[in-house]
Amino acid sequence: EPTVRTELMEQIPPIAIFLQESRPKFPTAFFEYLMPIVVRYLTDVNNQVRKAGQEALLILLEQDLVAQSDIENKVCPILLDLSAPDSDDEYKVEAVNIICKMASMLNRTTVEHMLLPRFCELCSDGKLFQVRKICAANFGDICNAVGQEATERLLIPKFFELCSDSVWGMRKACAECFMAVSYTTSPEVRRSKLSPLFISLISDSCRWVRQAAFQSLGPFISTFANPSSAGLYIREDGTLSIRPSPQDVASNSCQASTNINFVSSSTNMA
Image 1 (cartoon, rainbow, N blue to C red):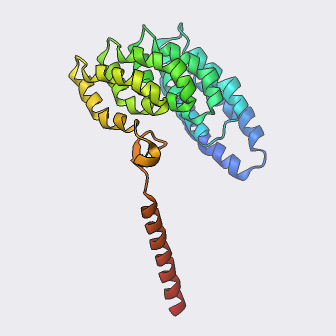
Image 2 (image 1 turned 180 degrees about the vertical axis):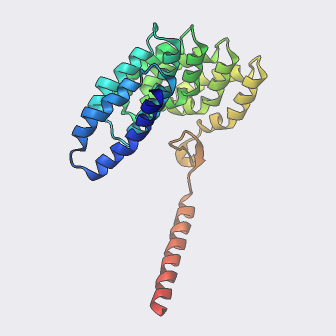
Image 3 (image 1 turned 90 degrees about the horizontal axis):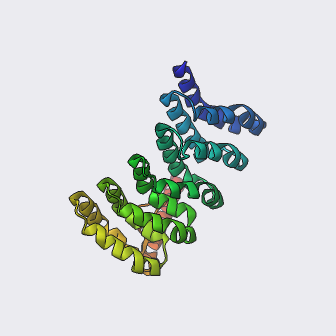
């Protein structure tokens, strides 16, 4: 019954967390009994069960409950099978979505060696524009996951393809993540390759693409600044933020110290 399998998937993350916190034999119980169920349900015939399995997997990865051996020998291989060129369309869309979401939770070596080649293939998928759109929307996260060298060698050429895609939604998604992509590259690549590419998006024939590009213009320009002097940095969620100045940090520290002394004095008086 699909509803039973869906409910089972929803219960596995809290069970795993409980086992980790309360039982010394967590690895044996989890790896032998629970993890195989999660992996198997990623290919379930019912889409709700698959969705529940995908959500359970992401929670387990986020909580660092999946062993590296299981990631490399069980999780990644099944996702590569589901995203293969001859895979069912629905399965392929789901697989590329989960690959993009889990990339930031895995170590760089695993992403670069096991998932990056398939991601590059999917960026050029001529059959399903939904697959290319997911790749475009998550491009900045993949760049951040694999680092500068792999980004410049493998991903930038694919980014150029997506930025000139015939579907305007793809180009818009590229404009929206442009800052995150730029932040991962060297100043030279940023200047010589990404700047002309960004100009093409600002001049795009579709107004929605132009609008997204203009909204990304400021963040893109900020990536040219020296972070140490400009006080800008990229948060873990990919958003641009302003680093507090040393004066502000000192001021906050002094304020906190004053508050602690005040509370301590009040307690002594009481």
